[in-house]
Length: 111
Image (cartoon, rainbow, N blue to C red):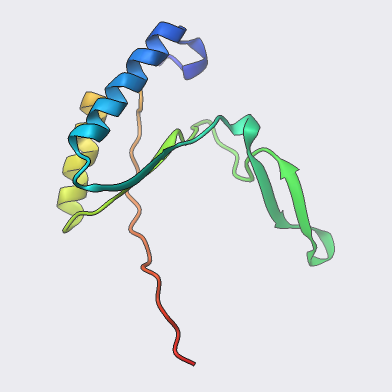
């Protein structure tokens, strides 16, 4: 498998164009989408010694995969989300994994 770092500028531009086309075709179901910068641009805040906030460079989670972006979609059920995810993997090759995360809707607390 070729990594993003190994792709030419032309190949990267082509993959980005494919992703943009897919997002445009499914815009009625996509609430928001964001591309993310590479991990070396990340800053993390986590609990350090003495329970004090600690700021570090890079992502807190270590891994070989990089999250390239996120999209918030509005679908009726998991089957519809899977349909979109499968379409993404076919029409935007090079983006090898799609994770589907249900969101917790904001709840207003009544005090």
